[in-house]
Image 1 (cartoon, helix red, strand yellow):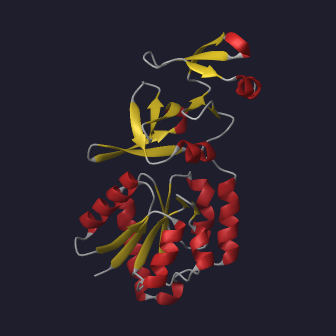
Image 2 (spheres, rainbow, N blue to C red; image 1 turned 90 degrees about the horizontal axis):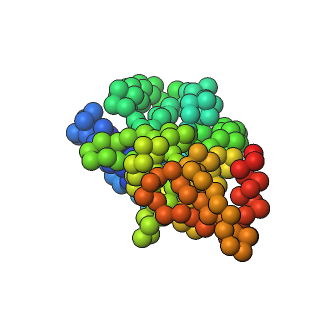
Image 3 (tube, one colour; image 1 turned 180 degrees about the vertical axis):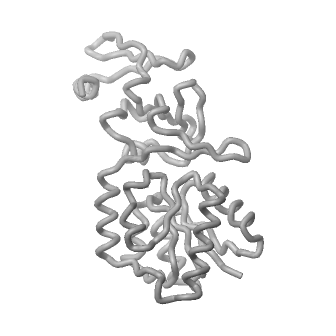
Length: 255
C-alpha cells in the first residue's frame, strides 16, 4: 500500500491528518512528519521517496516551495493550507490538488481517489515548475492568514482571525483569545504570528501581546507619555505602551 510523508509544522493539524489517513485506509504508512523546509530537504536527500507527500504551504522556516528549489521531489504532492481558496487557485489550474484546513474526511478521500487515478496514468501527474511556484508565492505574499487551527480534545477547531481579540505568550507558549474570552494554545511564536496577520488589524504592542483593534476596552494616558490599555477580557491585566511605541500605536489606531 502507499507510503506517505507529512510536511506540517502545526502539531494538531499533523495529528488530525494522520487520523484521517488511518481512517481512509489503515494500511497506508506515514513514513515521517517533518516541520520545516530544512528538515524536509535533508529527509529527501537521505531517504527513498514516498508515494505521496502532504505538504503545508507555510512552514516554520519559510514557504515549502523552497524545498523544490533545493532538492528534487520525485513524487506527487498534495498541498495543505489555512489560506482562503482564491489564494491558491493556480494549483487547480495546473491540476495540482490542495486541501484547505481544517481538512475534512471527504476532501481527503477525494484527494486519495485522484492520486489513485494519476498512478494509473502517470503522464497526467502535473509538474511543479519554477514558474508555477513563483506565481503562487507572489499570490501568498499578498495574503494574510485567515484562520488558526487549534486542537480541542480529540477535535480540531478553526478560529477565523476576525474572532480573535489578541495573541499572547506565557511561559514560552503562545495562545490566542477569542471574542468569547476563551483561550487556546497555538503552535506559533508571537514573532511568526506577527508575520502572518494583517498589520491593519493587529498590532505588536510588546514582546508579550499582539492586539486586535477590537480587543481594546479603554486607553488611559499614563505617566511619562505612556499609555495604559485595558482589554475587553475582564481578568486580563492592563498593558502599558512604552513611549517608543506610542506614536506607532496611535497611527495604527487611526488606520
